[in-house]
Image (cartoon, rainbow, N blue to C red; front, side, top):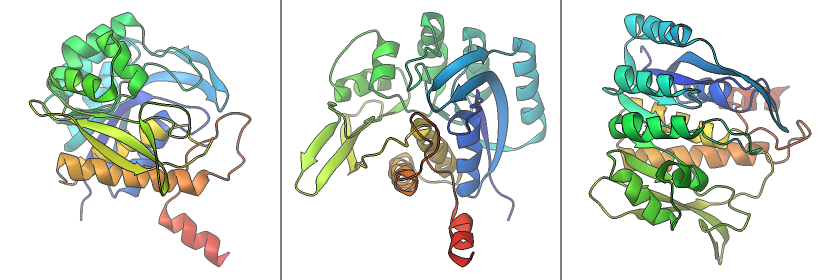
Length: 276
């Protein structure tokens, strides 16, 4: 059967953990065909982002035109967009699709990947046409320009139009999205649908420093699952479960000198390891 096509509009990660590398691997793991538009080229490893090159706007637009003119997109997702012009382009050209927006504004290392002009373009142009947005707590605060409890921030973002999954972040660090239970740590995400009260979604937390690319992996899995026809709440739970399983797979890896990558291996790789 011909697979659904999912597009990622995002930047590269030369270390292979986040960005387009994570998105395309995750699309494939969910049985979809991945297409891509490169919005930024980063010199990046597990220790941080060392350089960023944003391609000319006409090159970004030409990539998007090439995909739209040839492939039947079922869904799209965004990562680092690089400029306000690209944010507006994505809103204009992809707003009619199932669209997952991961508002990548600050890297795990602290590197700023989206300035105030980019944040404003998100709020004014992209969020109102998005199907789901997946900010972490810091990104939600940046987009709204205010502080608040995670559920309150999720509700304010949902008032702009999209469904919102405000992700819990690094669950084993002190964080408002983390709670201690009898069975151990759980991470609490917040789901806010337009016009409805926000609701918490909990899942097991996994202490690990190999978490670079977690947000990209979650949002890519969500886009692929929506493309395959799952409703938003079910897709969110499945994407969270998949992300947790990939974190568990890579938790004891020793790759790089900083925060290591989340796993992007598939069951095929696991079978190969068992028989070799």
